[in-house]
Image (tube, rainbow, N blue to C red):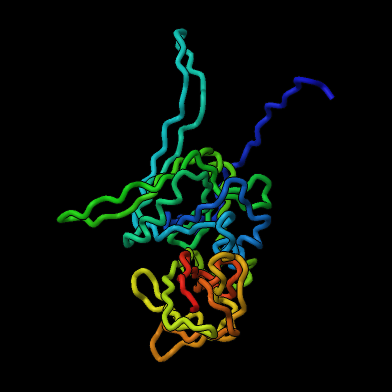
Length: 308
């Protein structure tokens, strides 16, 4: 092996046009993922469970799909050259690509939760209004998210007489070549490799937080109300005791088995039954993802209740 040997050859592409099947579409959805994330194959990227499993993963590994993008404004710097006194210009780098994506209107709770994503390092997958999912590939096999220098949730704008308040996300992409030389695009609505037809607008949904409210706590059960922070009743726990969390307050990670959970005549209100427990302080709610059998819902704060 020879030290300091270099190969400056570049790959040259051909310029003959393929049939044009229409534009990729405008950005409609974004998924924030941890640095180093990749999908091993195109088939896995076209499989909806790849996305839903990671949306419902443990929080330390979870992917976070953002709300629908209602407006996207991108910018692209001109290439950067260094100018010398001799009149020679020397290429330094391609211009940086950025995007500011305005998200659909959301309540105060969701705005507060979204801003908790700030201060972390993210990369991003994108989807368009044409159902195309965009990323890049380093080897023609893996489907990788765009590298970013930063992702920042911006302060919510204020309502005015002519405009509503919205939250936006600012993304500065780290490598324009991931868009211009190695971009990869898949479409789960048309690709024959997709196991089934599916739409990012349906599958790319984040976890909805629910409130847990306990009444009538006894040694053998309680009444549990589950509802969104917008007041919407949650009926998805009916008949699924494995999705119900019961633990001593002192040992919240040690679950106590639930015998049954049955929704009453009132939506979102359940009768929960368990084997007789001793007097103590308890926590009741839904188990955290990915332990739940039903995806996309959690109770971040379990209800505190006491058996006397």
